[in-house]
Length: 458
Ligand code: ATP
Ligand code: MG
Image 1 (cartoon, helix red, strand yellow):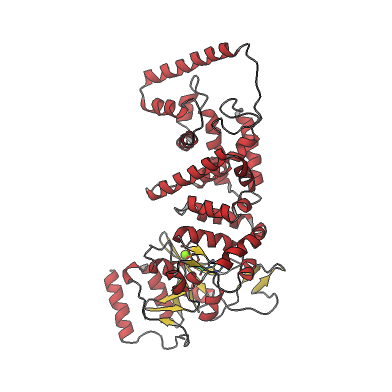
Image 2: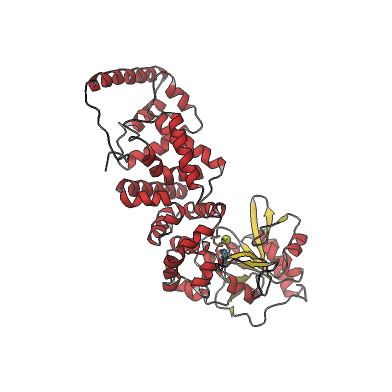
C-alpha cells in the first residue's frame, strides 16, 4: 500500500501535477548532499505534506523528526510546517482540530496518531496586537503572527531543530547551519540566547532534554545563559511545567536528564523542596538516582512508567522530611499520612500542577508504604487486592534497593504472594507473635527520639 502511494507521488512529480501556484522560497539554502530514507518517513505526515502542496501551499516536515532521522534515531513524532493558516489546514483535513491560544496550530488525527501542523511563524516588531503579545520581561504570551519559511526557521529554538525537508522534492533546507551543529553534536539556540530564553524560558528545559537524549553538548553561550535565566521558569504556568516534567523524565533518559537539570540549577526550579533535601541527604541522592535509573530500564524493556509513580519518587524525600519519626520505626496512621501527603502535593502544585488522576494514585503509593507494614488479621489480603498494591510493592523494592532497612518486608511480601492459603495464615500468625515478643522486649526500655527522618542506612 505504501509502495503504491510512493508510486503515485512519483508520478505526480514526473507529470508536474503539483499545484502550479505553489510558492517555493527561492533563496532557500537547499542541501542536496543529504537524503533521508523515505521508508522511515511517517506515511501520514507524508500524506499531509503532499495534500497541502497539492492545494498550493508550501509544506515541509520539520523539527525533531528531521534531526532524529539524520542521526539515525526513530523520531518520536512528526511535525509539519506550512504556509497554510490554521483555518486553511482545518478545511483540508476533516480529522483535525485547531488547538492552542498562545501558539495556534492544528492537530491532524489518524487513529491513535496525531501529526502537528503549524503555520510558518513570522517576525514581529509591532507592539502587542491580537496576534502577538509579549510580557515586559520579554516572554512571548501570544505568537500567532504568520510569516515565511525563512522567518519561521529563525523563530525555532535550536539550530538542530530548524531543518525542513520536502519529501516530494527530496530537499533538505537549512537556514541556520543546523546540519553543521548536528555533526558537531551541539545544542545551540538560534539568535541571542538571553533574548530567546526570555521569550520562552521552557527552552532551558528543552536544551537539557535534547542534550540528554542526543548526548550532545550545550553550546557555551546557550549553556551560560541558563544559569543567568533559570529563575524565569517561575513565570511559566505550572500546568505547562508539569507536561515538560513528563517529557523530561519519561523519555528513557531520566537519569542523565536529572543530572543535567541539577548541574544547571534547573531541578530546584521544578522541585524546590526535593532539591533542598537533595543537598543535605546522600540517601535522597541515591534514592532519586535509582528511581530514575529504574524508570529508564523499564522503558527500555518496553514497560510503562506511570506519572504517579514518577511523582511519588520525586517527592518521597519531602514526605519523609515531614514525618514526626522515621517511617520504618514509627509509621504514621493513614489519616495523618494523608494530611502530610496533601500538603506536599499542594506545595509542589505551585511549581508543577499534578492533575488529580495522578495525585490520587501517587498518594496511594505512599499510603501503601505504611499498609505494607501492617499485615495482621486480614489486612495483608485486603492490601493484596488493592489496585495500587503492585506499584506500592515496587516502590518498597526501590526503597530497599538503596539500602533502606525495612526488616526484609519486600521478601515477606514476595513470599506471601507466592505461597498457599495455609502458609499465609502461618505467616500472619508469626507476625502477631513476633510483635507481641517485640512489645514485651521494649517494655521498660527508655524511649529515644531521632531528629532526622531519613532512613537509617545513611
Ligand atoms: P521531540 O518531539 O523529539 O521531543 P522536537 O524537536 O520535535 O523533539 P517538539 O516539541 O515536537 O520537539 O517541537 C517541534 C518543533 O517545534 C521543534 O523541533 C522546534 O523547531 C519547534 N519548537 C518547539 N518548541 C519550541 C519553543 N519553545 N520555541 C521555539 N521553537 C520550538
Ligand atoms: Mg516533535
